[in-house]
Each structure stands twice: as structure tokens, then as C-alpha cells.
Length: 175
View 1: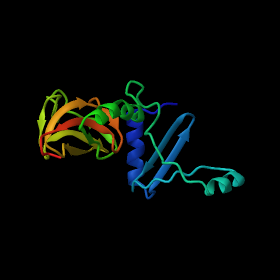
View 2: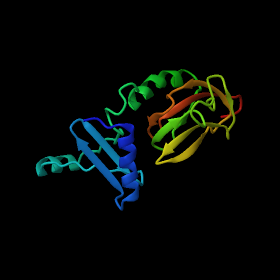
View 3: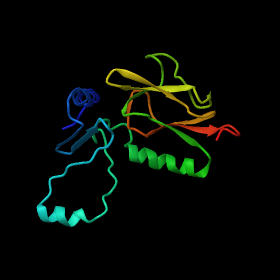
View 4: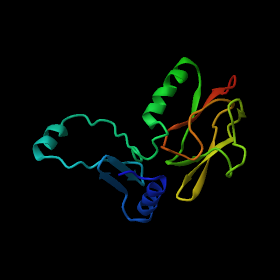
């Protein structure tokens, strides 16, 4: 089973309109975890002995994906972060990250010029893109003064909270 972007957005809308704080859905190889508050604690059915043994262990960090098979053409978030890590480590580049989970748009409307491109100079308040969540568009500001050196996501791509959207080379004294 695969989930389309429309399916995921529909599920997000249903959770938002419900009285539930979180939802964890697992069907075959598709796993979806959603939380309104951002404090998601996965619930896993375990045998009592196994649960008792793991209770004393330090919990591993929770990494949730919207859906593993959502878009095979886009690299998974973790793979994207690993690809960008060497660039960020070898220089003083700063990532402009997605403020929320949603669909990223590089331009104000279809067919329009993108807000920024590689080489664009940005300021703290420069809008670099939009992230749509349930028909609400959230502007993404650069957050620093500098120059765009890398575009990390494609237009209309589903992005996760904290996922790098752009890499910016800060201007002198901007850090």
C-alpha cells in the first residue's frame, strides 16, 4: 500500500479536526505518525516480558516519516541530511529549515519565478518559500543575511519539520 500526498494531507486534516492529540498508523510497510503538539510518543504493542526488559533501557530517538512510499523520486529526509552534512561541515553554511511539516513551494504561485535561487542575496526577513499545511500557507524567512548556495528540496515536495530547505553562506558579521 502507498499513500499519495493527498492521502497524507487528508489524514492530517482529520487529525487536526479531531479531539486526538496524536495518531500512529501502520499498514504493511507504510508507517505514519502524527502529533498536534509535536510531543509524539510512539505506542508499540509488546509482549509483557519484552516491555519490562526495555523499560530500563534508554529510549532511542524517535524519527518519524510521513510515509515511506510517499514519493519515490524524492530522497528520504535522512538521506538528504546525510548528503548535506559534508557541505555544512566543510564550511560555515547555515541551513534554512522547514518550520512545519507540509508541502514546500518555491514560488508564490504556479508558473511564477521562485522567491530565491542559487546566488540570491537574502536578508533576515527575506521570504525564501512557503510551506502549506491543510490549505494554510506559512512563509519561510531566511533568518539571516547571506547568499543562497544550495537548494535542498524541490518545488511541491513534502517536507518534514527541521528539514533543510536551503543552505546559506552568511555575510560577514551576519552570524
